[in-house]
Length: 121
Length: 499
Image (cartoon, rainbow over all chains, first blue to last red; front, side):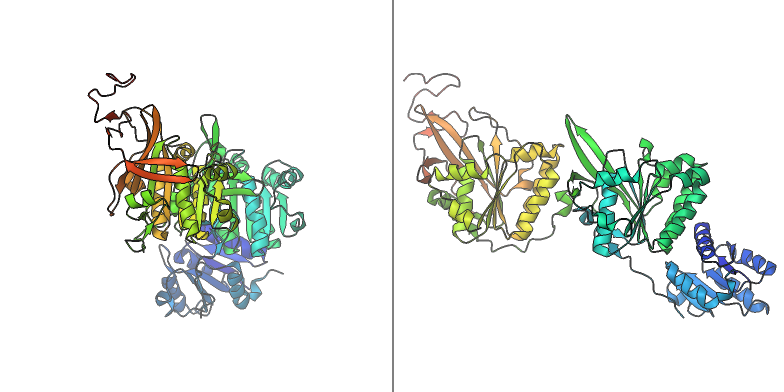
């Protein structure tokens, strides 16, 4: 099973999420915007995308559109992470939403649901 | 589908008296705060006080990581004399770990990993990182330490763990990495002549209002006690106010007649006069009259101990003991040695707000002035106190001593009277026919008619009396009275001529 792809333009957050998920035994990959995320997905299909809404170059909704257009990517579950009010993201077809700021328990809860197979044996 | 809802920042009380007031409720949960101060400023006592409180009050768990090469045994030994220290909380609820070797051998990355794993393992809800200076020393660049702090904030934030970072700042003042955190608190010790005063300054506190400026603090056997500046605490706004005609009498018929019944309720009155002019006794009469009427009153003294005050009052037939015994007449005594103005402010506010006091006599402006350290502050302090009294309908008197008992020149020891009192009663002594005679006059009584004459103030063993005006002399206020029936005026420094 592919890794969990974390996509956020704040490197501190990406790094912290990566380290915390690695500590839990999950395999991860990281990207700092939607364009980088598509490149990572071309290298290895992830089992789950943890996606920030607002990013430079290509934002979260734009990445979701690109994934929707690609038959190889459209069924990958996406968890949207955003500090914006629900009006901004409730129309998006995400598997789940994680309103920022979220806790480690929230994160692990959603990851456990969608990416159980990403745990390294 | 939503996995959670945005959180309203939860507060965690600090357990340091006064600090939650300064921070408007305590630290914000899962945020990172930096405590900066030179060695001896109280950082370790502060952090441990917060830690023990966090466990006892919030049922939390604390991870205390030291980055310095110091023994935990010694650290714990030093804390054991403090009342908050509870050895039964160690090592489970409060865990002390040294990260010195990890930092030395693996650098910042290894330290970040240790923090992440140990915080999770211990299920810590409060992390103390003691000695950031050690991490700064091993950091390859300033950028690296900034990245480390940012990463620490994110990780502990995700874990819901509040973080307290302790640093000396290497004595080099604030740098960018110190301001990245959610809050920055500075502990300082300042010298005023031979006197040292401890001060707390909150430089930054994200997402919340806080009390600006410097607040004094003490380190006691109970740990830190912070005294927020009275000026930042006092209530503002329009006082609900008692009826305009409500008066507070002195219980001295002549005095009350001069004031057409007394001073207005909720107002503040200065008793101005040199030593021995009768200020304290007049103030005590005022309080005793309130207590006799069933009001709770408070005498806040700097110079007279309670015993001495009771004896002094008894000497003029004022029996205060029954009033004190039944609890209507409260007494506080603060010898005028090394008082902290902020500490006095906290005590006064407590009296005004929680004791149900209706009359307050603050006997000794001079002691307040000396406690202020920075002289311009005392007026602002008094203005805040006066406003607080007005808001709560507390009628306050305070005595202001004039430096000179005799002489034509009277130097008022304060400025901006309107800001710090509504009424002024002037007391003085003058020599008449080789006798010292006291007199009292009403210099100012806001919004109330009053007798503007100078009346003799007599102190008998049976009580105080405000008698008639002086009919055959003038210029009493100058301290150099002259007879209106004599042909030659008195001259300063000399005897009467032509008599």
